[in-house]
Amino acid sequence: MKRFNAYRISAFLILVALTVLMMWIGKQHLIVLENKKYESGAQVFAAYDMVIVKISEKEELEIYEDDSDYIEPVGPFLTLELEVFPIDGGESRIVREKLYLGFKSRFVLNVPQFVAELENR
Image: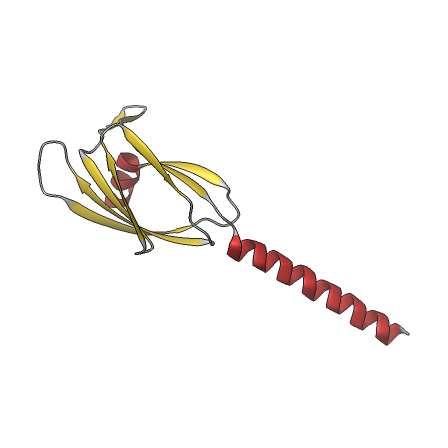
């Protein structure tokens, strides 16, 4: 009888672990991408003229100055590729970053601040 209960408990724990894993893999997130001026204390991050966002090399969207858009990726990891075009007409540059989203449902990403933080690493 003890052996039978041990099998039941282990089967139940395996099912719980699989449920958590499937929730983690299939979780849909809402990420709002803003291309707006951002002020943080003494730092000011100016908006870009245009930003082309590639999401995990599948989707592509354009965000213009003082605009925002959203993406709804599925899964715990996301690769963002941002091609930013400065307002003064300078050279465009490409920034890539792999994000871990985990169980977060939604968050806001200010593109000028995000790009500045990535370039300062």
